[in-house]
Image: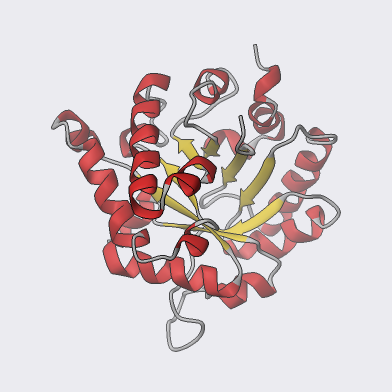
Length: 254
């Protein structure tokens, strides 16, 4: 694979600071001498500082699970990109399906978040994906292309080169269901084609596209064998150090 794989863990609304520190220590031990991949962890905001402290001697990236589009202001309960940077973060999730569903985030609002993250020097990990109803209506590719276009099409090529895309079919997140490697590959290939049409073949070849949705050590190798899948955004399996290490070391997974 010419693109460096990236394995990321989204801890969602789990782990207190003490629990995050303990899990960070366990990750550090389990991921000693890691393979040639990039690793990122996205804890809750309140646990960022504790995890950053535990991982400061490693190459593991710590990121925020969300970011507000404004750098500061009267936005109670929100966290800005400069705040994430000051806390030690190097990345931010944007557009996760749970934010789209529960907080009704979409379109230009997500585009502003992407630009805010880039302006602060964060790596945006932009999430996209269709619901079960949309897939059953054969609209998966249309929906994903629309989400990408709404949030990313206004970026320059150099800005887009700093973005990681994560395809997460909503029907496979936290359900135990997982898209077959072939289903995931079809959408990843369509995303890469969209990148090529938007910014050119060179960026299409180099931009990383992750798969998310009930990824586990038992299925990661088949997923990662697909030519357009460059990594995984992992939920529940990233809350256990040994399980996540098994995913990170996918090349050794039987």
